[in-house]
Amino acid sequence: MSRVSTGPSTNPTTAHALLRRLHDHGVRTVFGVVGREAASILFDEAEGIDFVLTRHEFTAGVAADVLARISGRPQACWATLGPGMTNLSTGVATSVLDRSPVIALAAQSESHDIFPNDTHQCLDSVSIMRPMTKYAVELQRPDEVTDLVDSAVAAAMTEPVGPSFISLPVDLLGSEIDTSLPHPGARTPAKPLGVVEDGWQEAAGKAAELLKAAQHPVLVVGAAAIRSGAVPAIRALAERLRLPVITTYIAKGVLPHGHELNYGAVTGYMDGILSFPALETLFGPADLILTLGYDYAEDLRPSMWRHGGEKTTVRVSPTANPIPRVYRPDVDVVTDVLAFVEHLDGQTAGLAAKTPHDITPLRERIAEFLADPRHYDDGLRVHQVIDAMNTVMAETAAEGEGTIVSDIGFFRHYGVLFARADQPFGFLTSAGCSSFGYGIPAAMGAQLARPGQPTFLIAGDGGFHSNSADLETIARLNLPIVTVVVNNDANGLIELYQNMGHHRSHDPAVKFTGVDFTALARANGVEAARAASREELVAALRKGAGLGRPFLIEVPVNYDFQTGGFGALSI
Image (cartoon, rainbow, N blue to C red; front, top):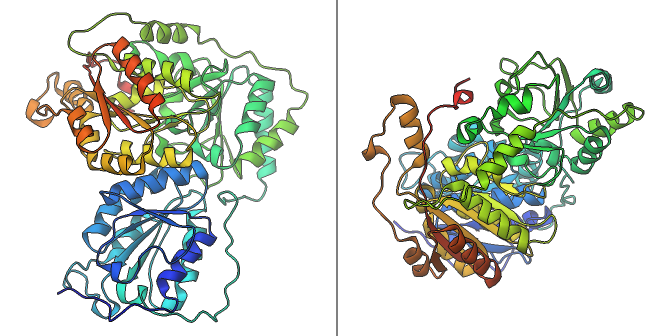
């Protein structure tokens, strides 16, 4: 049975208070899909907030995730009750494992009719969301909505940052509220709040002594270092002491792409992709691993840096160590990453510069790999696609600008290795959750966060088509995203795993029939082209970068599967 309001209210409602408080906390965009709660909320109740209608709630969650990641501020997404909320839950899961302060909101049945699994479209939303959020609550009294938003923001902005969830019964959402109740001003943390352990300076002093004694120290940097605002200090320290910097997937860009001390981002697939002992080259000579903002969810595992001789390890993080069974450092410094780096800088003021260990063979192998001049009749290779994207990014982006976004698949690990990133979060992927279909909404969030900068998206045919309906959203918003769909009519990463485990593949589990992605793009209002060679791809990328509106390029690709060299994935 449908339910409608008895008539519009001219007095402030819960919806007004909700949107006003989100605005007070800096939220300017709510991504989502609205259901029958439209009788209670129009999303124009507060000035300064835009509602972005998406084709799927997952898109709304990930777009909010990426906008929050880049801006460093809480962002919001919306879903209707029941299946809308469950669709949104994968976006929420993405933001908890990828560490973004998202305020997820969903309608719920009328407060007098909440009987989960018995009422039409009624599920126990809070119980579903609670295990993957920092805070989950259902509104009980309309006048409390402002306080709930404040609590949601406080939880979301506490390390490890992540999503909060508020369930909103539709009748309470449209209820009039008492505007005479006093509410203090919104207090939104300038940056995420973390734990500061008593005596951290003593632990930091031990770290400084270890650094002084080390011959070949290495900095391993994760995204929490970016969130802390520590990037300029890390760069200055690395340059003064000549410390190599290695990053997780998502922390690429802490040092610019071509910086001599940028030793790259690490993936467990790199030895297999390059047919080269990359992990041994990067970590073998190191005798001190200093992790700054390290997060196990970002998929750089301690086993990867244990190549070579014995190493001393130091962990610096704004959270207590959640995984001592996996990573038990010799020194654990629980504090703000920026505070630690500034403290360390003072402790090592007179220290002579180190001599970084030599990774020339790895750099030569990468250069050789990217310079492959061959033309393949069965499609380009992914490293050729990434190299072409880097070329055009360098031509079109101002120094330090531009974002390359990667969806999920085998190609993503080529992006981790080769994609250009000259600024923090200049390369974006779902490092923690690896959410299939991440590419389109992530590119939307990146372009909205950096409207004057180019955004390039690389996506496989599988992940892209799992969420391709939101091409229309990109077209409707006229976001100048250049999308490259690398198409091999298969889930290539799964085919790799089949070959690793069975030395053969089983086509029914991985192969698709062909999709004309250029026709799909045009049907959704996006101009498109097909490129079958590197020259055609570079020309198409240049055209797309100069259009000022969405553009899609379909590129046939193929993988030369080498099943050796992936041992790091099983350790």
